[in-house]
Image (cartoon, rainbow, N blue to C red; front, side, top):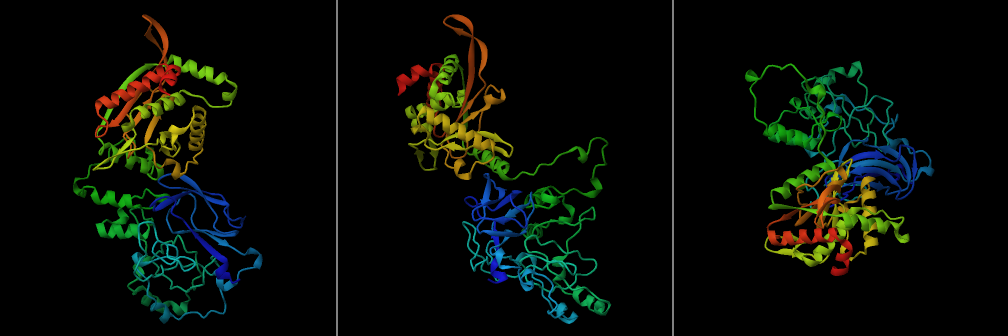
Length: 514
């Protein structure tokens, strides 16, 4: 087997419907490790969840192209695997090692090299570009690029450096004032060393019009501007000078959001700039990039808040009997190893309430309302990466014990950061348990596509009028937000009332409602 066919580059796959990028959270392997087929090799966070990606081939890890914390576009190579490590060393001509038999290009031939512009560069595996195996990498919803593909200029490397899986390529030395931009995907390749005899040819190379493409502008601090080619193209289109921006991406790189923010910000004349004000400065500020789950949550909440007309109603309920029912349930032999919490009874109350009022479990679809005969019950969960809402599929068909097990699995998976995108898709009705934080209630925002969400507050011992006397009772407050296009005040009030009645006396409600 030849060296070329042995080395397989694995591209970042589309981990969800139409996702365009993911952040590498942690590499589970390192260069030199021998891995098996389908072995988890990297953990990646997308806009929907953090997932582990399995290896597409067995073999030895040859190269890792992106470090932890790097945001990578879908279709970009992230790792190279030697699929036949027992076949012996890879031939020098296929590993990128220097080859003494290769002729040294003349200064005239170097000056005639045409460097492709950055916006036209397409690396193997990039969306629209040729991928390994002769395929074309196409993102869901997009067609392949129809223009001719050109390779991005390689970064010059001192003699003796090698790059795994690359074919040696001679490149012209850049002018003294030009600093090459790092190419994140392709490994480095050897570059010829300029000698005094070749010095007169340097002006010819500097005069080539394509040389500025490999020159990274410096920012105001004299450092290099780090930005991907699409971001640079966006900056040119919007007339934004990258050298004036402070990047919020990994390693200080400039993102599309930085460029767009600069383009929409009002211009400030230097003459009217306010003088520095004494006091705390930027060294005491923390900037947290908005990405992944947090970005998706923000976009969904803004879209929902300004699309569906929200109404919120509140109901305070004496849940003393519910708490006693849970205590009795815990003592039963078949329930001793089961996690039992007040959320279980709230979920059951919601599911029984939907049977009485199916319109609560519906979606506004413009010209029609879609009423669903199944309930994918969402449970809002706070994680280190932000708020997520996984759901229990077809929860209305589960017994109380099955529902308890499903809720336990859902919460544990979310806390471990292992919730998959499929577990968060298709929700129809949601409960947010703000009581675990000691909060009485709130006005929750609807998840997109849902018509109701219930906030379950903290259960507190409070003075309550019970049988004509003020007694200490276990009390909680429920908050129901609903889409007023679908659920009017009467329907919302009846649903909330019935949920409260169930929690006030769950045993009687189970006998009467089922």
